[in-house]
Image (cartoon, rainbow, N blue to C red):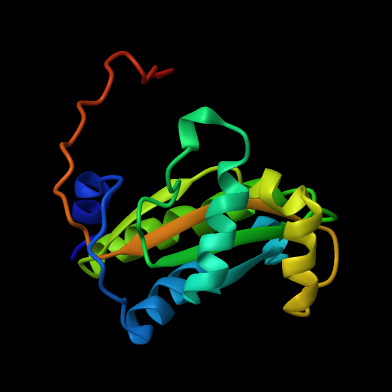
Length: 172
C-alpha cells in the first residue's frame, strides 16, 4: 500500500474479531513506530507490546477509570495493545510519542489490520497500579503514557468521516 493511500484510507476501528494477531505483524507495526522521527533523534518513546490477555484486561480496567463513558472495554475487544510511553526528561517527548503512534496506526492499516488510538495512557501509568506494571517489566525512569494503539482484525468497516472545510490557510 502506498503511503498516501494508507493516510487517506485509514480509519479508527472500534470493533475487533476474537482472533490473535500474528507476532510477525505486531513486530512490523512496532518497527514502524520505532522509525518515527524524534526531536534531535533522542528516540525518547518506548513501546510496551501487550498480548497477554490478563495484562491487557488489567490495562483496560485501569484505563476505564471512573469515567461512565468507558464502563465497557475501552479497547473495544482488540487483542493487542501497543502502549507508547516517553521519557519526560526529553523536551519533545509528547510530540515524539505522538509520531510513534501515527506510524503504528498507518502500519497496522497497511498490513490489513484495524487500529485505533485510545487515550488515557497518561492517567493509567500515573496510577500506582500502572507504575507497578512498568516496574514489574523492568521499565525504570520517568515515563509518561502517550497513547494506547489497539490492534486486531477489524470486525467492522467503519464509515469514513468527511474532512472539515476551511482548515488550510495559504500565505503565498
